[in-house]
Length: 370
Image 1 (cartoon, one colour):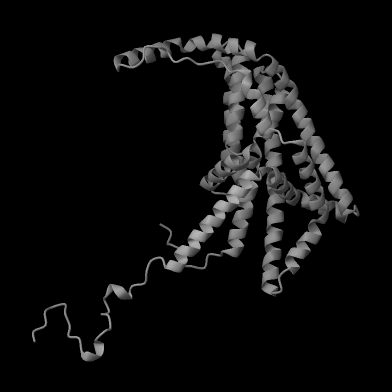
Image 2: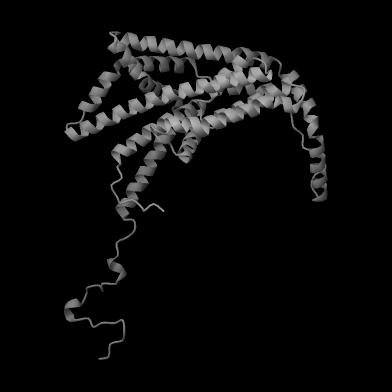
């Protein structure tokens, strides 16, 4: 019998056995059990996100207190080494932090209330200075007419007061949330050492205990360093902004500097919001557009130096954060929990990266550097 190229004879012993090059011997890319496991994990993730979203009134103060308590635990340990009882140290730390926050809020609130009472007047001044855009709007009208669009100019309505109350309700937590936050924060700092011991001793295996100890130590050190470093950097940004506002003749430079320091705790969104605030205040306070934008442009230079040179040099040595990961975490937590979620996005990202590094180590061969 003639055998064609690429074929071979099948003996009686080979009957029922697939050929070596048969597709039946190739393993599936995703097995059915793996697909079911991925689907269940996805459903669990969706359920957790839904619970966090709809139970925001409970989970946001608790998570905020746990993260802040982990950041402030090194200070409590420092006081404990100075023979200050940990419970008393927790109360003193919370009182000190609350006093600083109240002082910053007072610096911001006084000019904010003054300017909010003058919204109609400020809107009229902005409308007057918007006449500089009459020629670009006329060109836009001619372009619309040429392409067959509407002949009318786009109208820009002035801001109304109806947005103030919903915004304050969205940003300001309730009294119960404040109480839950402060109670959880004090109790967490006071009992953090016992909680650490309980979490470590919960495992019977020695390796698991050592891994848990390393994870907790690294989270505490990184979050404490993050809070201290970011606070110092943002304080510098606030001082620089206050000096810029005073040098350019902006009203209330101390309040604007405090606002810049506070908003800089929120990545990406905070500096952009501060730039807009400085631009609006400058356009209202100065007769010319160039003079009104001087402080905003100088603030943009300060944040550029801080974001591209100062912060990466200091924080990057301790824990490098991918810019895309920071942006996605910021967008997700802001959508989930609003402004407080934006503040928590970077600390929670740091915790996630530490857990991933210890629980899911990269043991597979890495791709060559190209």
